[in-house]
Length: 487
Image (cartoon, rainbow, N blue to C red; front, side, top):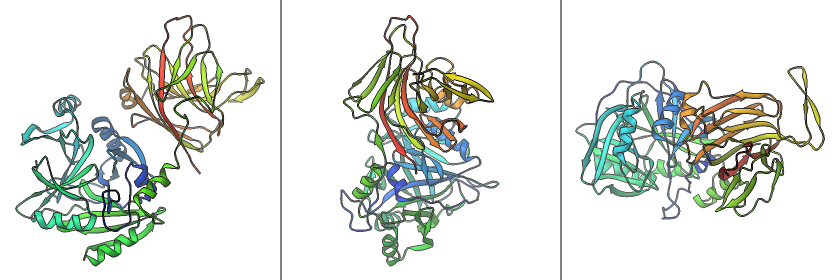
């Protein structure tokens, strides 16, 4: 389960406050004795070099899955709780093969169908599906030289492992276990490694030490702690070589160390230490608020048409009604700067959308648009709408100005976002409003990117579009609707 070769170049360090560790779906802990509930550390991110970081984000989302999350000020791809971070390499830089971190791995339930999908999409196939013992695996390569193993592990979907190439297997794994904890085991009963929660650090014996990772396609890997200063004291006492830090950076703390055989490792932690992984998770989860209690529509107001809304199995269900205009289920309060996440599943014959920063007045209003007066009728919901479009056009994630200006940012020139929509299946929206910036993602793929300041604040609403005189009931379902208000 290995391959070979390379050439060299480097990039920057990262800021990762603990809030990001937890937001990424992982925890952190004090640097103390490891227990089942409180690990010594968490595997946090893999730092990859690319010629075009945004293109790399799009490539990984499209072909390997995941979603976009912020790590400090940077976009990253989150897969199985691990962030993949991309920075721009200058000039030529070597791939991962031939270095001491040979490749990374991703797991899928059906490796044969996944490889067919990747091959059909034009992804570079290094080797087809093989099997060693119970492990099925294959290799692909990203456009920037990172070797990627595809495995079939029924326990894990998404990011699976980083794979070391070492000239002293036992000594290397002992070093990582002493530094970061984890559980020594063999993946598939065959490949030696250490398990950190739901991901692996695997290792294979090679004849001679490989090249250091700095400046290559896989520049470094990372572990996080709740108390980085305390962790550093302990690591230094073990003789671990610190290259940088710990130092304050971007609201958190970072440090760089050098592991055996030139593996570059970033350590991350919060500006103020958390007492435990449990405390860190609790603090972060408090920043997100669910907009639906799971049982009722308390906190919501229906405006516009007479479509029917109900809660079923924790999902909000909107059902069309003939001969009624567009209907909107609106939050009772307004929101300004926020991150909104939700999932939806829509009937292929029903248009819909999610209103943000929207308004509705009891009396008629007159507004000015591009120097011209426009009348807004009483009771008319108007404002930014993130489109849900199940038709062939597939503009889901585009931004339409309901009741005012029409399309502001469609997806006619964004094939990646159009292709990300999954007909008659659950789809995920992420919507970020910060000042005059409105950005959207569909299933982790960037969709709209709009600068507009007409409405800085307003309610959120779930639309059921009018269907004319069509009598067949058409449904849209929303679930996991949550919001994080921004300072």
